[in-house]
Length: 613
Image (cartoon, rainbow, N blue to C red; front, top):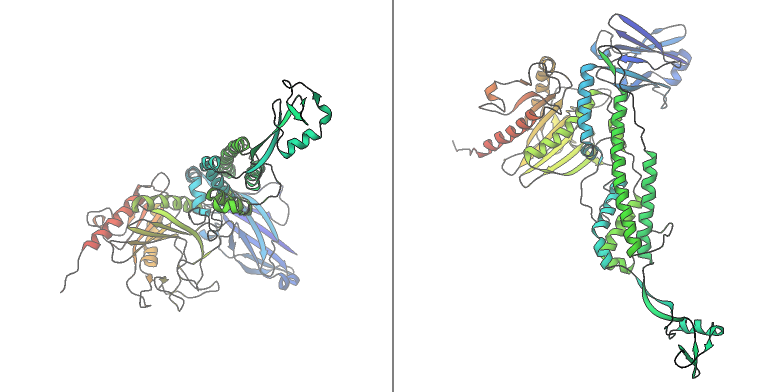
């Protein structure tokens, strides 16, 4: 039906791969190679399947019709080989999947996995950033994948705020902390118990019944030796039953606790075996002096993520085993398969049982963990994305430090031209990361938006929305919009009005930023983003600062657009302004300095009292 080829151009060399055939070995492509895809479709099949397109990881590559070739329509990727845009794997590394689709079908027609050879400088920086992400793995997973950080309450309005592992951890932690209360106040029934002793007293119904059933064991005895008198005659038994009333802990409420601990132990053993990772002994392959393979490094980082989780599971299993021993010794009860927590009258009256039962119910109903931290690492195939993720973690740390705030809410928000700025909160799709974060203190309220979409002013615009005021028009993909990497909206009790800071990551060095980006992005973000005011119109722009963040520095750590004395770290700082600063895991001082200086300038401005003219 079709043929498709991959043409790889590097310096003076050219290689062609027939992707319609199974490759004997995996194709390796240098990240700086220029790429051309060509797809030939039978003319008779074209109207059925439509125009082809290729997706690299999750990035689509458009095609244009080139020519006819013997009953075939030949389509080629739209970007010229002479242009930088045809370097489709630029700043990629590790393994990447290329898939062929047709516009009239939803299924993948064909796909191949290729090795992307990273430049050594990129591999070194990627290793540094991935080390940072992995060292902050708990923070990364929490920031990217957790839902809002609400308190672990026990009412129906608080749905499942954590993954199943986190809920199990919360339940076990609560049980451990409440153990003294359980030992002091626990459910039991009174039950009669009969024991055989030489000096027993068969006065209860069960003991009398036993004696009557064992009359054949009676032997006549003198008054001194008799331990049983019947019809004024003395008899003797080697042992007589004695009845007493004892506690019975094998009741429904305790059976629920024992069965829960048993089930959770089995569950943890199962997922530990399921996600067990073998140690990788081989390293990255050196292709030549300039390019290296990076897929093994990615697997090592994935292994570190899983190993971290397995260690967490081991610790949790030890806590459960300790609880099982205590409950078995002090509150023994039976294991009842399939038993579910139910609020009995006793549970309703005792908060430690009630709270535990509600946590147990959440554990049973929560979905199984998917170890999305591994997905996070394995999804970082583009160095720009790695830099964004690393910066997101650094930015969280800087916001907490500079504004002295705590993270109080995080969520996933869906953006669309008919939604207000910041989007509408939705259930986070699998594989997506959180894109809204709210920090708060008694003085500051800071909202961090990750990749928000800023649309032109329209009837959908609401008060407080940021809007795109550039002279751009709708295209075939929808309404034109801006999408900076990060937007900070800041409110302070000391400021007369909120302020907005825009941060954009550029995986470049300072010379490229100065040559290609800073002027264009200053016009784009500092001059062409405004805010809908209380009267529903546009007024003064709220954007006070634009910071471009870059990870490579050849000679300078900052690129300025104003005189040095007017920079935020200068003698006479001013706003608004735009700057580009070096930010990476080992270089965070400039980010902290600029945010702290921004706060200082805003505070000084708030002290100025306007005078009547």
